[in-house]
Image (cartoon, rainbow, N blue to C red):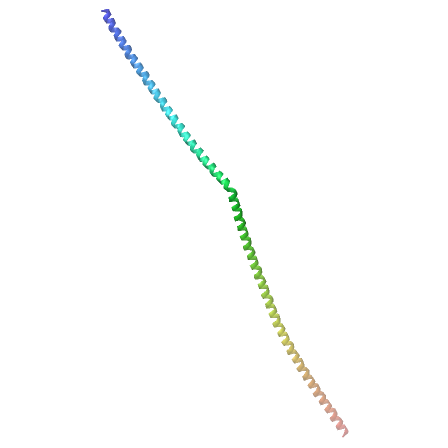
Length: 175
């Protein structure tokens, strides 16, 4: 009996050992699986993060390359744009100077016209004054001539009258 009890105990111990071994292995396997899943998850997250970072870097690099390309194109076009800007500025300055010159010329012409008209008016005014003065001189001359004639007539009459008196007085004396 000892052997049956011993076998039973042994079998029970072995079953218990197998059961414990199975549970331990299961726990270890679950732990391993959990650890593996955790590591795989971390790896996936790191991979995703890495891919995302790489994508962002690629986007930034592409943007930088595009910007660099645009800047290079601008740099290539710059001499032409500069020449065009200089020509446009020169044209604007020339137009402005032409307009200013035209304006100054018009002002000078208007001033010259105004001066000429003023001088012409002064000439007309002086000619009118001369005519008035000539008329006044003629009138004064005529008055002087008339006065002279009147004086001569008066003098002649006075002389005639005095000569007549003298003649009358002599004739009366001689009588």
